[in-house]
Image (cartoon, rainbow, N blue to C red):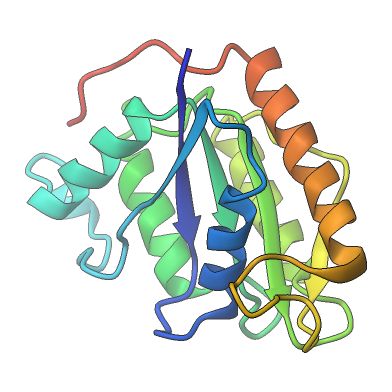
Length: 190
């Protein structure tokens, strides 16, 4: 059975380290896992007044999440938390109340930063949000990746000592998706 994993990159920057990490991680997965980076840059700011008539971009996002077997959040850390654009996407896909696309989806949380603690504080905040959204979330290994010149090779693959660690993270995520049923029952997007 093929598994599609929705990948939410919390950075809009063209040369985002987190997008580069998301792309490299996908190459560590088994062949029966397909990774789809979901677009969040075109979502309007969340407004509860729009719950009854969500924008087409919101419907698209919810539909892609509902179709996925799991979700990987790849987040930078902005001001010791998650970026506003990521929170906006999370809020859109969780609404209206009782129609969350996130519920029951197995999740992985990872991120990269130039700082020594990687994205530890952003991941802590994100994990709190995912717990509220009833998303089973991979707890170990935690992956607070520090960007260093030797992390990626010329082809964008993870290189050096980090490859073994991140391969282990991906292997655990794959097991986690299998253990949590791979896919929640499909529901109609609002």
